[in-house]
Length: 250
Image 1 (cartoon, helix red, strand yellow):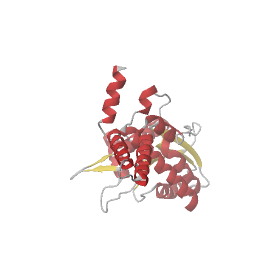
Image 2 (spheres, rainbow, N blue to C red):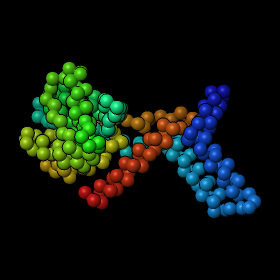
Image 3 (cartoon, rainbow, N blue to C red):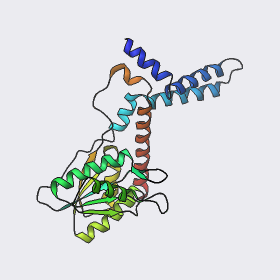
């Protein structure tokens, strides 16, 4: 009980829990004289939505509904390419570094390519004009690891759809039809949708990495507001909106 109270206090004195409490108190104030029913209702609704998205129990369901694709690899002996989709860079004054999601995807792709001897296609351009691309940064990291396999840098794409459209040209040039697609588990459904359209003749093999939704909860702690859970909920909502847009416009 002492541990739960400790975690409860911590969740309520820091955002997003603190913001939920403030919104709730403002809503109560709006219901007092002079009564502003509409404002109070809107504040309560906002507080509830923020709380729900911040609860680990909610984020687990939202993200877990996206992380349903299992890993699949071509049979041993077949020629395939491993396509790794970048997920952004951290940029300093004079240096760039892979963001954690990019690094996780690179590790997953590197492991498969190293074990099977398949070429790696690193897909990801630069959002900053003239800046280093994510694909080039991933290639640099592989070189630092001493990797000597085939590495192909695709540095013109900026979106998932562009990643796979550009990768399709490389695969066609090399005559490869088996594709191992490496990205985060929550991002795999949208990536496969793009790949199916950009690579209609390819045999697609998903290789999801970095699952966010764990399989078990923590009881009452699952209902305490948490910044990490809010971040994961927002990722899930963004992916759902992306899926809707891709189905409508691709």
